Image (cartoon, rainbow over all chains, first blue to last red; front, side, top):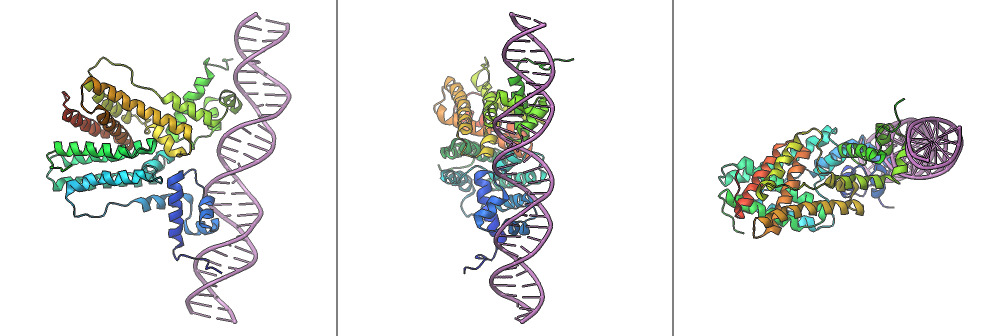
Length: 188
Length: 188
DNA sequence: TTTTAGGTACACAGACCTGTGTAATTGCGC
DNA sequence: GCGCAATTACACAGGTCTGTGTACCTAAAA
């Protein structure tokens, strides 16, 4: 008989499945029974690893908190590549917007811990932009970083609704103009 | 005794309340009982006006489908005023993002009718921008209108998460640069 | 071999949800 | 006063959800 524990890390398996279902179908739309059934474990096992659905939601979002890995490309290219990467992700049928924005939209403002993670994520990306802009000696790196963050979330929201990956290219073009206007040399 | 029907239009009263609760707390978070109780009517009355919760959700979104009224201000000023208006709305404690984006995030892609309304709304605003840009003889009105629409949804998403009305000003500044770059004379 | 950690099966409590059925009541136009 | 349409109170069916309780099982370590 097959071992009852195919993978050693049951917690990670639960999180993987919760991520897929929460993200694609919505946090409120998915019950813990559904997650357990999808993995083929009992609901009891799930509750042995996470004390509550709320804890699972929090862990799901924390697992989504991934920043771009360091790159040796020039800063301006890294910034524009962000939007190329988004366009690729938009083209996948499994893209359904920003999990943090969606979670705040679904769970409401009263859910403090979820909002806290979402704010941290948004700010960390803004700071990632700001860091690159500082390397480019941009005058108002602070403001421009915010504008780039707005462009990112804007094309994500537009694609979520319209299912139109070209929204990423529109945002990229806007970013290019903003960079040029700030005195940054940009290729295309 | 006070009349049982303070306002003549019960349907509108239901919609008003559904709007408030759906928008502020989420569509899935609010049950029809809650809506009826908030108005002080019986659930039966609600179901006499709307055949199902789905119908109520659709009506809620259709009621939110409001475009800016015509203005005699110059086109460029109208475009920038959009972001000023957003900043004012962000400052209200009752602002909780774009109801269409939130509904798509909550109800998922399988809900065709909701997505259809959301797409129509996004496109109508994009066309509103495009119309103004055409009046300004902008070369690529199509593309620039899309970029402005991205800025709008971007600052809305950012404010939803961060509760920071200044996101609207960041978007406004980006819009100003994009307009200037397209050859439009903009005051401030 | 015995202990032990982790998993399973399954029932269940208690809450909430959408939607319906029904009979009584109310206010308004006629 | 009378009829009518809207509204009410209230129970209920049937479903879902989160979370727990319990007894059993299995595999690997001691």
